[in-house]
Image 1: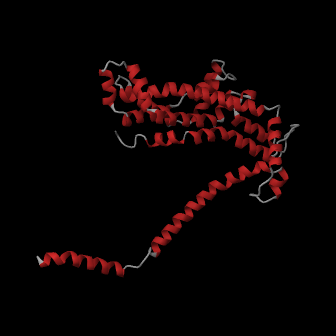
Image 2: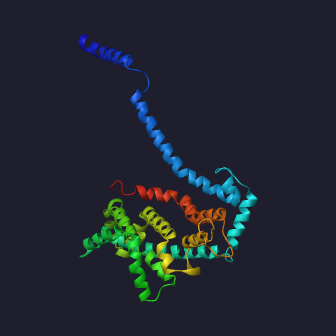
Image 3: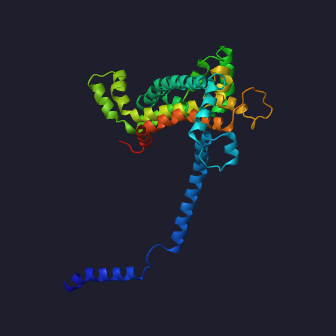
Length: 314
């Protein structure tokens, strides 16, 4: 009994003696490692933050102040309003037309994408039919094809049916979103219980009712995620609208290139009667990304839950 009673005491004494011989704090090697990690993180933070800060401050300055003053010095609100008026007055307010076109193309394509991608992903994940595996493989293969590689064949196809210049020439290709189908397939395969759906079928619910009343409410996070990815991709798409919707039917991303061509610094040979200064161009860039930024800020909760969905099988 005495040997047994002394064993815990001896163990504690040995642990205290060992801890007293170890140096306090981190070793030099760990300090160097942590300092290196912090330095790398700060480098990338500055690498991405510096251009954004400059872009936000540029519209508050005149063209001369932007070139002569300190890069991160702030201008005035009067200059900001002056640059805003110059942007709105360009070609009789065509910037509003470009924004309206972007909303039309991206919004209409978003609706079509959700109406197609969500049922398609549900069918691939939770139903059995003959060509199911072939369709899934085809979806994966199409995802690997760069969008720019599809612009020329899509343009020729749209030209053959005389849709060039029509809003459908942009909306229909924008609605083709195989990544949304695959993302929905992954979600329904891992995060929706088949037993729950089978219980609804046993209770007499038809397949359409099971999908609308049970599967769809459970899929709210992935619906938000698919919608956001589709909206951002379509809003920022340049090449396809450039060739399929020229002129006043262009979206804001193509309009930015029109503004850029009227900046003397980038196009010295321009003969346009109205030129655009760099601060006005910077303001137009902010206006072009503001709608997507606002949508992201108000949908963070659903986006985060959608990104983490499927990590564990329920």
